[in-house]
Image: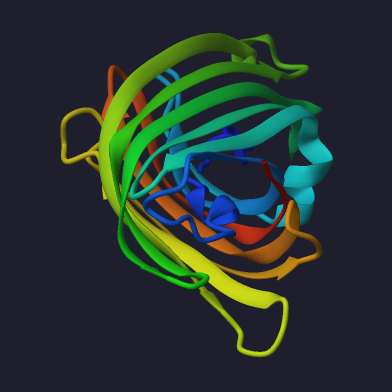
Length: 252
């Protein structure tokens, strides 16, 4: 069942914008980073009441084919050691699976996922272009799922929809280190949240290779893994997403 294949994503992605060092006595610095995450999905997903959850194993290429629309954007503001980080993620996916050829049974699912992340960041290390930040914040999730099972056998026909939304607190760390003698650098992040307040737990880890083309423009490519365990209100999502990501960073 291809439900929420890239939407859960999600994703924090503060890693995409730790691209320049900011000294404590400087004014506000801003960074804007559109990005794309080509993530597969593996786990146990059940968004509808009275419908058993299903084992899901979707490759990144299948997830990309199923995407009708998506929007991913990070904004970062920093002044000295203090900063604000936001991540807006939206995806709309539709997939159709043939369940049984003999009865022409097909499963069609549409999933719309919205994730908004906001966090306070504090720099514990700034040395030339090397920096390490601590993060604390919250994520807001909204998932709209619509499922239709159609068959030549009327008793097998099934349809249903569900909308679930919740907040999750999280803490994390992110950092950046230049590669000596070049415009390349590495960065990454790690975060953990949920704490059984809404989601039981989630974690994210990622690592990227970046290149600074100019003072204002960077590009990045890397790998990201996200694991979410949520089970409330007849909505179950216990799955892992992982895959490559790319981003463009504009500093101003």
